[in-house]
Amino acid sequence: MTLDYKNPNDWGKSPLTDRALRLEQFKAENPEEWAARISADIEALSTPIFESEDYPPFTGTEFLATHETIDDHPYSAAFGQFLGNGIDPDIANTLAFGENRFDLISDDFDDPIRQLATRIYSRFEEMGYWDKLPQSSSNIDYDYIPY
Image 1 (cartoon, rainbow, N blue to C red):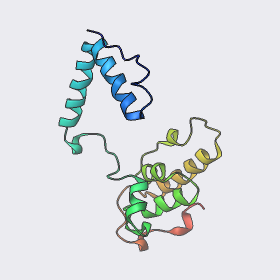
Image 2 (image 1 turned 120 degrees about the vertical axis):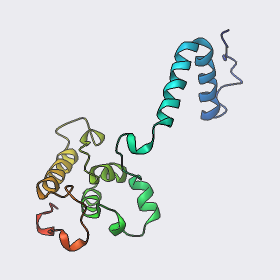
Image 3 (image 1 turned 60 degrees about the vertical axis):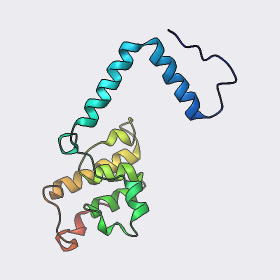
């Protein structure tokens, strides 16, 4: 059975309503693909977090909203450097945890912000910053951090 949500009175009430109508339409027209999506979602949810990909435990925006300073961040020196150079907090957080995801900044290799982030990341990597978690701020040689 195919649903037909072409009634103009049903659309445009809210983005959530429109999305729900699109999902219902898709579910009615593609039951096999819908079942595959649901199975994939269930499998993803049943995978324990520690076995899934190693993402930072919080977003940069979330961290900034819940902390007065960045000193509580496990990789505060890197996080602060990326933030201080104009990189989005969520991308800065991902980079600070040692993931070289410069594609989140830009797909253009000549983008000046991407190049700056690459230089900062490379300098931290050369210092062995991610080899072990710094125990205190005295373990960080700030002379080698690019500004």
